[in-house]
Length: 160
Picture: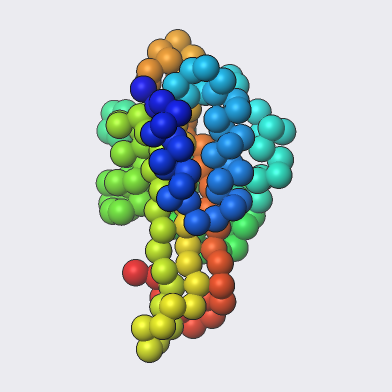
């Protein structure tokens, strides 16, 4: 169960105000449930975050994720979701984050510092993934709602 105390701790770890807003919107939509159902997710509710949104369908045999929406800002920052419409085992760390969200039924956050050639921090990349329930089975994740942002000047930087 995704209780308020756990979600409050998760929110405190987020560095981006935009992703905190996305988490607040997700929490408002879920109401008293542990997570919102797929039918509760209307993109109009997330219009302020639309350019940073990621929506992925969850498939279990074999576990993979089909991206149904990738916001233009997510594409422009070169997020890992930008390269393919499907995330599978071969996508390493990205797949593990999506899998943790779906299988452990919990929000997942990723934060990476961008370093220039000398190893100095120049910016960051942050992503959150939030579970969305299958309407018929409210404890099973059927979709993942996420968002990604970058900050700073990433010109000439590498992400680990």
